[in-house]
Length: 447
Image (cartoon, rainbow, N blue to C red; front, side):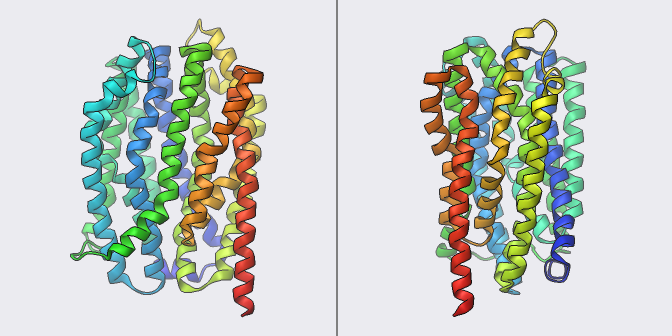
């Protein structure tokens, strides 16, 4: 199935077949994150909304190691399948799945025991800190069964189960929204219930995701045997861009939250969380589109189909640019209607601050799509150094430089403008790195 899918269909048809289901899946995943924000903001309050935003960086960091293994192993698995080495691909799949579960167990234990001291260091008031600890500990308890979901989703798409992956993501997202409504909106169980709704949905997704592999009907199957340490090192290296991007992005959020707390208090953090909820939909579309083509691009790279590989990437870049432009226009002129969904009555100041933050933050869509799509491409073609460099600059280095300079002159507006400035610098670097790859590919073709 994967061979027919990746080598015989036209690039445009293959792009739509892979990209649209993945974009829908990621959009639904973002939608249940937005649903959390809606129910938390309306039924629990502004402090709970700020608490969820404070706790998201450590949660995302907890997924970073497993995500590194998932992305790095997906590249090697797809390359092996392109080289017709299915036994080696299955061994990589089996070893990395076990490693991810083992790492998740350690992360869950650490997260549960260190939740309170970690959040106290961030400087929030005791009420917000207490709510954040409750939220984080639910995720820590479920870590062994929810972290591996994102890996199995990658493996399903590599094996051509694109529609199954889409159905799985849509199903668990709808279940999460239903549980949010029941636990928080109807039963009023509090902030722990919002986390519980997400964790129960992801746990079910993990079980259903592994079901096709256990039936031995896919190219990948669980098998005995190990993999060379050198290969494992390459897997870590190739997934390091996603790992450090997640870590760097979470660190940036910690810094941004600390700056916001110092400048305007919990209201600014709540406003930022609302903007990030809305941004998560756009970011998920861009990431889902880029990530959807990784198995196909890696397969073509392993099979030596260079022209087809670049043809697919051109379609990724064009689609990412179109989505970003549409998002920018919508957020500049229609974002107010969405932000009001997260704000309870009587909080006009929060609504005004959030609208202003969105208008400035959304300028990042002018150039941010380049960093996202090209970083995924560098990972797919086994260029971990380039991908890591771009990911670190995009997620941490350039935004921190902007954050160190702009608030001194612009105050709170400087915080909202730091991501757009960081995205512009990242786009320039991404184009330089892509030009280098194209030059080398032309030189190799002439030899």
